[in-house]
Length: 496
Image 1 (cartoon, rainbow, N blue to C red):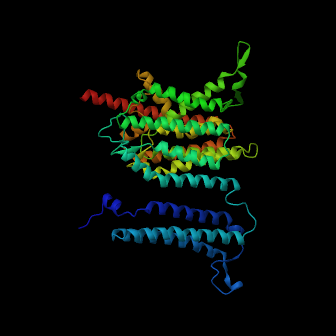
Image 2 (tube, rainbow, N blue to C red):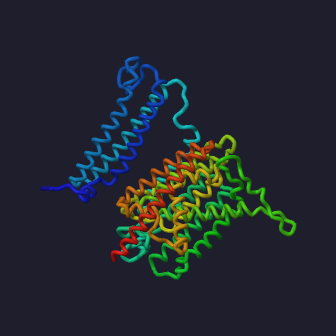
Image 3 (cartoon, rainbow, N blue to C red):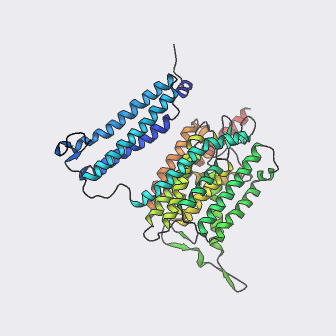
């Protein structure tokens, strides 16, 4: 008897099944959201299909409008079933045609529903403000660009043998199950940089940020190359050398004036760093903004790259955190119109990161590689440009932030280089506890989204007790997991 197993399901799954499910699912969700928000304002009777005789005969009771999302759901479910059947019958183009038709018809139904609500409703606040409409285009453009270009980029990397094979390339923190191309960070940064030229009015600040990101991406790519093929770039293996080059690259944004000039006190008030100056040869200088900004950027690009050990993990973290920064930036548009450009950059980063998820999901076809530092730099840089500064970012990224902090402390206590990789990060500890890679990636996504929501809520409020409680719980959990892991390793050594 024929048995259905995971390999069979993967083999039989139509090529664009997940993409169709996601796209139509989003459209159906927006249909119900629009109905939830606007149903009360609609007229008692509506022109549903324009299929009857002209005049009042075209009108139907407004509750009939729920037929549209119901049809969309039926169309999606039945269409996916037919697409799977067509794939099993080796009708490849037939399944692709069915999936394309599902997306097209659901798009038409969604537009129809929005139009009916618009022409039959009282004046209401639109579902999306003008600012959100402005942000939609860069998000979609970067997502689609990465999604389309990634397959060809992966083929090119494979042709050049820039591929990590876990059976050949050994690393204590490596979790790959099979060969995977390196260089995803370079692709994402190039797409963001190209689109930023079109969507963002470039000035000295944004030019310096984009230039630094591209240089960091190239540095990361060179490190990926020397990790996979024989080159003369072995000096990049030294973490201290990499850190020094990163500092030189980051200095571009410091010279452009991107600095942290004040730090919000979570309990009360604000600490203005420019008030602390030194008089050298009759000249007053304020070193604290430059020192703290340099430390913040270096810390961020390295701590986030440490959360890049699980397939699919990093793209979600960067994408969600960038969305949080964009939302925070939108809050300050009235007092600072330039914040719209910060929000656009955040959406470009988010879209490009989400566009790479399919190819980094387990088992990954491409890794971010060391170029992941460039995406982390972009996120850290735009967080400085927002009024919320670094506070919101720290809250949203509390899990990788505290994991990195505890990891550095653990390595120092063990007498190790704090920048030297090992298998002691939170994702490794969870993996040792029996978690699957997909579950760990989703855990990081969920915690970033939940804490990002808390960050948005607390941006204009003083809730230090809640924030420190959350941080304390997360830190305690990571420390306990580290202690249990260390105890298990000691017991294994005693047994051996």
